[in-house]
Image 1 (cartoon, rainbow, N blue to C red):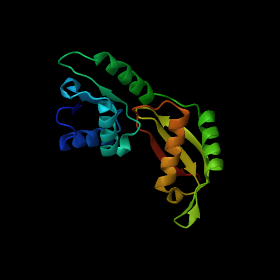
Image 2: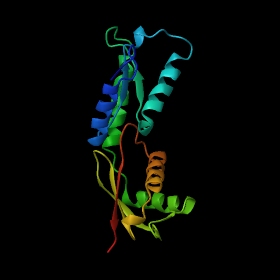
Image 3: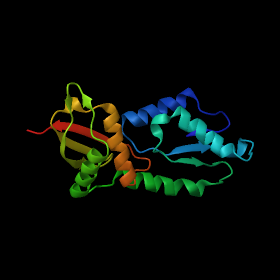
Image 4: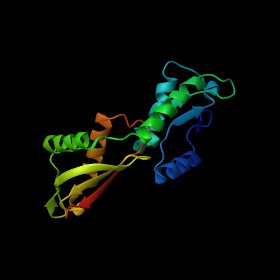
Length: 173
């Protein structure tokens, strides 16, 4: 929860850090929106500030409301429900493997640590958060940027709004 009258504080960043470390679903709530002078682009400008400060939370929805005036509170609960359903979502193994195969065709893994990553198959092993294990030739060949690419492909194909995604690489034996 961000206090709109004060803007983003260091404490807000700490709280988000705790939620990220615990791999929890996140909905960013901007409270006291009634205290902000409303101009034509005030909401979009505040959204830009939030996205700039929390670059790693581009998947989290942002809700503006005023708890005191009870305005826009109804917009919060659908976002919470969406984040929860994303957090508990299960992907079929066959569908996941099709997406992984397509991702490797569209953007082949780069050479990294003396080799090139080859993903043999993947499986979702848990939800809360959605956790995917990829069986690969060597986990050392997975570059963080390619892992982010795979995460973004999963987000493009499925509704993971508000939910973190964990990708674990295991060597196929």
